[in-house]
Structures are given as C-alpha cells and as structure tokens.
Image 1 (cartoon, rainbow, N blue to C red):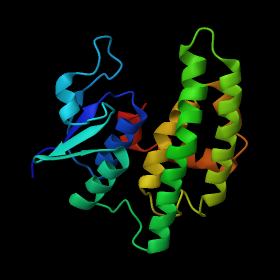
Image 2 (tube, rainbow, N blue to C red; image 1 turned 120 degrees about the vertical axis):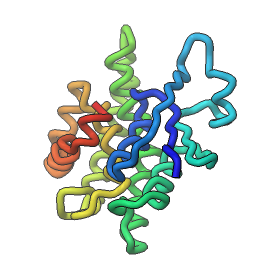
Image 3 (cartoon, rainbow, N blue to C red; image 1 turned 90 degrees about the horizontal axis):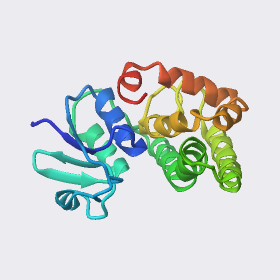
Amino acid sequence: MGKPIVYGADYSVYVRIVRLALEEKDIDYELVPVDVFAAEGIPAWYLEHHPFGRIPAFEHDGFRLFEASAIARYVDEAFAGRALQPQDPRGRARMNQIIGMLDAYGYRAMVWDVAVERLEKVPPDEALIASGLSTASTAVRVLSSLKAEGPWLLGDQLTLADLHAAPIIDYFLRVAEGQSLLAEFPDIQAWWTHIAARPGFANRVT
C-alpha cells in the first residue's frame, strides 16, 4: 500500500487526532500543509478533498476521506498494528460516546471559547470565556464519570477515545483556567500525564 496523505495544519486539533492514530499504528505518512485561515482564502484545489473547506482531509491509494473520526477509524482498521478500538460492543459504544461528547460539547468550549479567546484575542471576551469554562467543567466532569479503572479512558487499552481527547485537553491546558479546572479531577490529570509522555504525542502534538 502507498503512503497515506494528511491534508491540514499541524496546529489543528483534528489534524493532530489523525496524526496520533497514524503514529500509534507506526504508519509513515505525508502531511500536506493547508491553511484554511490564510488571507487569500481556502485553496480551490483543496475543496476537491474537503467540500466544506475544513481540515483534515485524507487520501490513501486514491481513497479519499474527510472528518477526523472517520479517518482515525479507517487508519485503525486498514493498517496492521495494535488495535485502537475495543472488540466488544459496549467498549466501542463507550469509545464513540466519549468522542461524540467531546466533539459536541468539549472542543468548542475548551479550545475556542477558552484557550483561543484567552491566548489570541486582545482584549479577550471574558463573558465568552466564563461560558466556555462552564461547559468545559461539565465536559471534564462527564469524562471523569465515564473513565474506566486503569491508565486509559477505557481502562487498560489505549483507544481512539484517548487520541481524540488528548489534543483538545492539550489546548485547554495552555491557559491557567484550564490547568485549574483539570486539577479538580485527579483521574483525568493522571490520564493526561500518562498520554502526554507517549513518544507519538511528544513528537507530533506539542
């Protein structure tokens, strides 16, 4: 099989999710930079890969995908290596629940409403940050309630849920509010320390 291609920017949470899946499967791949925030706009050629102009997009031997969760599942199932999804239906359901919860409620609040607003906006919108922190607190509390016993979110097996959560939490922890909130949840703090030490995370995410 040919080398997979990831289209996107290295700072993107969702590009990082895909890259972590590739790293954990020990797959060599190519990252083609795409800046969807460029002043000149989204490159016209890229809309053939992602009709909505978001990142990432993915290509492997002529097979194209967009949406990070679909790409990560394909990476796990199409390539050899350690499985990144539980075999049992309940384990998979819990993994998908965590991923869906983070997409629907955690990502926007933690990354855009808190971290990006605090780090990049002058002046930041304090009301938006406060609202984001309220939602983020609920998301982290739910994540803690769903976490199984063991080092990873689903217990002893590292899964796509861990790889989905890690880049979101990474951005959140770049601001003091995120650090303070995570400190209230020792189980999630311990999980974070564990995954942040993985070579693939250190090499490609930070």
